[in-house]
Figure 1 (cartoon, rainbow, N blue to C red):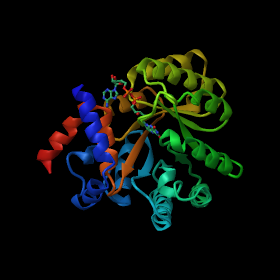
Figure 2 (spheres, protein in one colour):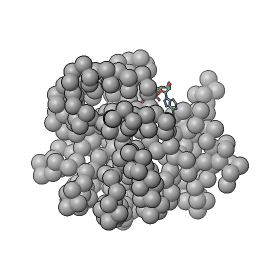
Figure 3 (cartoon, rainbow, N blue to C red):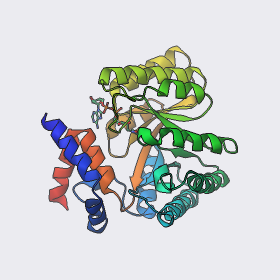
Length: 304
Ligand code: FDA
């Protein structure tokens, strides 16, 4: 009950334009620096370097919320292009994750596609890869349509499929051959479109992981759930799925010990590294997801 209340408060805060705007001026606070890799490209690249040295590969995500006009979407597109250039110049091992609503999906589908073409084309020049994060279910079909359009020309782009959506089993079948990041799903969805029961979500998660792996497609298993990770290890060993056909992914600052343990065991482990001054919404959503993360925030209150 208390957990549900605090979850709703954090989700409410994450959607507040006033708080998000104010937070840009505060600088990283409340322990956010433990899960956000700084406010600039330079600070993020420095973190990626540190992680690479420990055997972890990365995906960089330039944080952004509430893009409502073309100028902001163009600015976000250019920032993503600059991030790809910075990755190349620094010679670090990281690809890029993007959110289509930042790039104009709510403004105009074709405009968003044009912005994505610029980003994916830049990535191609640098021999790099772009992962389209999946947002709420209202954006799912439009996101998959953009992916399909891009895949007609580019193979260095993939997306994310969420196990809580009923449609995902079919989507994974339709996306055979495409590099997918598989997750449980982070948004509040209705019973009309998504499983609500944790057990059902976990079951469907394993189902789509197996489907994609057995189809021979590259699969990123993005979870902090040790039970799922153990099952994937067992399944890939039993079915002789080569280690270069899949990777584990976790968020920056989460289960760091387990990340390093997986590297030690010889698995590819990618860290999702968010950065930028628009950190507040991301940080609030992480607090909503896992009440234990609040300890970060409390520690941060006293350390900054
Ligand atoms: P879940 O929260 O279900 O926890 C299961 C169990 O794991 C817990 O009961 C606990 O035992 C253990 N556990 C979990 N977190 C822990 C921690 N921090 N410390 C210790 N134990 C812990 N979502 C989305 O909708 N679209 C997207 O594009 C993405 N992208 C994405 C990228 C990456 C790299 C990750 C890791 C996640 C996403 N997600 C996402 C988020 C995803 O959908 C999901 O909401 C979160 O990962 C939480 O679910 P988990 O599978 O991690 O475990």
